[in-house]
Length: 94
Image (tube, one colour):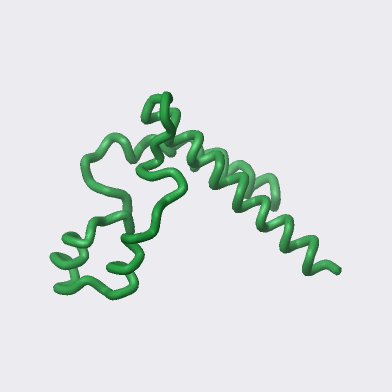
């Protein structure tokens, strides 16, 4: 089971830069105007969340190409998620 999960994560990692091929934003990464147009209003949680600073805004890491920035951001996300998973696994086992 673990091997299949790792293979899936690796496959998804390979396809990370596909988002660069479109001018449309990724799902859920819309500007407030998109929510206004789509829903007819901007939910308060979304309106308030726009004031938060992202750790890596627009997946851009200074001094690297856009594709490399996407891969590095994806790798960081994978490492963080697996790290949290293994940490929780260790804590819950005790």
